[in-house]
Structure formats: structure tokens, C-alpha cells
Image (cartoon, rainbow, N blue to C red; front, side, top):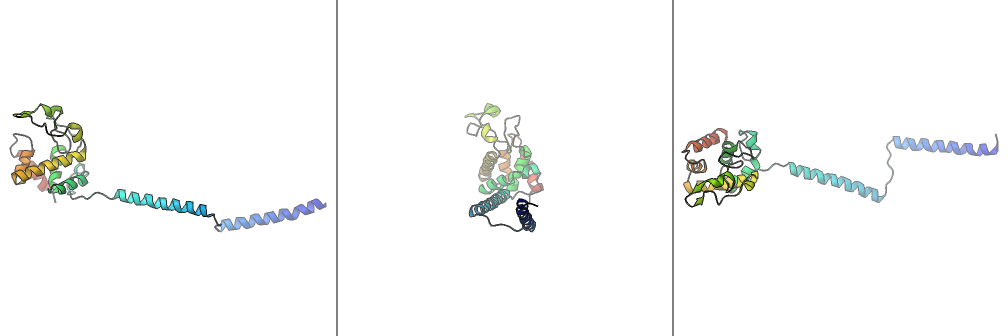
Length: 202
């Protein structure tokens, strides 16, 4: 064996030992010190995840709901909006829900043959409804337009406010609903809504 070979051999053995030691520490799960910048990055990632989790939790918090769960899902899906405006205009949320159920079945795209629009079937100032004439001109000239009433929240807000105004004017629900419903229907509409209110309400 020449001197060159004898000098290389110990280095090879030493390298083999070092590789084995490193493999042991890695297998054992020993962590090595990291730089401050790396620690900051990990902290930022963790904080970011916590923030995103908090946001997700906040977004999952449902709006206040006081509509009876006895109503069909097509109506209870609007529960938060119904509750918000029913409380604002001092009406029972279940009464507003009963109107929504009777008028549209909870379909925000509902459009009647007479031109009524949306969840609470409001007559707009344009479209088919523009053809209804009263003694002073177009019957619904002061109403919102079709595009506005297609927005579910706007529709519920407007319809609830209108119903609340009729309750204030007539003093009780049956008379108010009679005025809210189709013209010349007598108490048929009012009694039907009140029946739904009684059946599904809390």
C-alpha cells in the first residue's frame, strides 16, 4: 500500500462516521438552530393562519334569525334579512316570512303576470306595472323600479316598510294585509297569509 492510499483511508472513514452521526440526529428529530429571519417567517405564517381562521369563524357566524324553522328552507334562507327589517319596522318576523311564502315561495326572481317583482311581489313603477292607471296618473309612479326590486334585501326592506305603514294606518294585521294584497280580492289574501303565519310561526 503506498503513502497516498494510506492518507486517503482515514479521511474516508472519518467522512463515513460524520454521515452516520448526522443521519442519527435527523432520524431522532433533533432540530437545528435557525436564523432569526426564518423564525420570523414561521411566526408570520402561523399568525396569518390564525387570522384567516378567525376570519373564517367570523364569516360563518349566521345573521340573527327569529323566523320559525317550520317555514320551508326557501323562506328561512332569507331569515337574517327578514329578521333585520321586521325588527326595524316593528313587525313579527314570522308575519313577514308568511308574506314572502305566500307571495313568491321564497323565489327572489318571481315575476307575476301583473308585473309584481321579487320576494314580496312589489309592484314597480316600470315594466308591466307601469300600465296600471289611477285617477292621478300611473298607480305606482312613486315605487322603485324593477332592477331595484330584483335585489332580495332591497325587496324585503321595501315590502316590510310598506306593510308596517299599512299596519300603522289600519291598526291591525288583517286590514293591513287586505290593503297589501291584490286589489279586489277582499279578505282572501289577508286570511291566507294569516293562516300561514299561524301554521308556521312560533
